[in-house]
Length: 143
Length: 113
Image 1 (cartoon, one colour):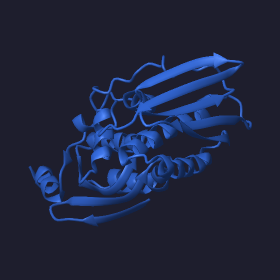
Image 2 (tube, helix red, strand yellow):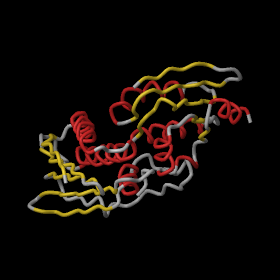
Image 3 (cartoon, chains in turn brown, orange):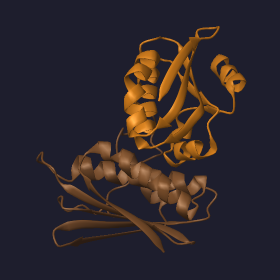
């Protein structure tokens, strides 16, 4: 199991560093194009969600990220000290509603749940700790 | 992220996108995209062949513009999607809302039909 990690701030510009980390790590562990797409997608949706919703007051916070991979799975971990939020319990949007009724938001977590094979959440020591697992070797994004 | 547009015959407008529709790329082009789409009363084709990635922010850009077009009785048709990008449209349920065609010829036929 190889892994890389980053200590980030709650700033959306950090997505550049995250994407660069994935690209470098992906060469080391030979992610396929599909695997890399899934990982970029999961990271963007989860990280954006944390930055936009975890804290109600402005101010700098740190977010911990770790990406690890074996031959079978890739695992992404996110830790933040924002308000308690369990993405595995968040409501799912109705993706079959007509164009007039479709909400503009709510899609990000829906996509993560479609792509991830497993998600684990725990609130520990005033922190949200989320683990998203993706099975490797798939031809499609959907798990 | 780059955006170019051209007017085809029969009141059809073609918008070509090139790059990644992640947070950064979508923010770079969404104003211009909305201006091209919603303020011109023409059917809009979107060439997606050079779009290699889309996240929920990009999907939301299409959804809000399709809503605007539909309210004025116009439509948007996408074509040339790369397979993984098309899968994100399917997982989002947007393939039921926006017609997706293999290439420009089929998209133009759909626009006129």
